[in-house]
Image (cartoon, rainbow over all chains, first blue to last red; front, side, top):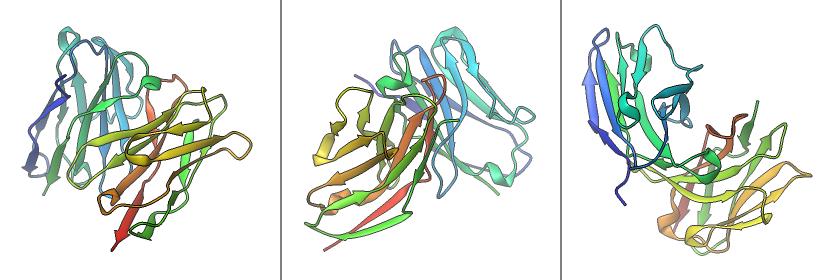
Length: 114
Length: 113
């Protein structure tokens, strides 16, 4: 089975610019998550989708971050404008149903804001 | 809130010796617990998971973990370390909804020849 696809793999932008990340989950996985992993830390949940609806976005900095999952499949995460502290790896994951059955993570997008 | 504490940020072992990575959890209900591994510049890989079945959980690559409710612990062990085990290891618990994952800060495992 194909894994979770993410693009781009790497991105370097200047502060105050905008950036978008794309994720294609495993076919049939209803639940999709975006995590932020800052260097030296564990991943932190940003947003969780169930099909195309948002289940939890309590830790998403909504003044600058936005995410959507149109048609309940692909998802995009956008940052506008970016800050230096947004430098991190952005991980997308999907699961068939609940997290108790484990996730499949993508390889992530490494963002550097200069 | 459900959370995990990884007691060691770095662990160093010699190849062929046992590995012990410690994790304590805090949960108001019976949690699902996981260990994930992350090799440099690679994605997160599930090692094993506990979901209220057997308390001793066997995972991939010879790793296992024991759920101890009385001690609120879920330590990861391996009898004999291999050089390829060098990586970052995360202890993880599901949140209140049972869906999202709360990660610990990670333990970096170094394996020396």
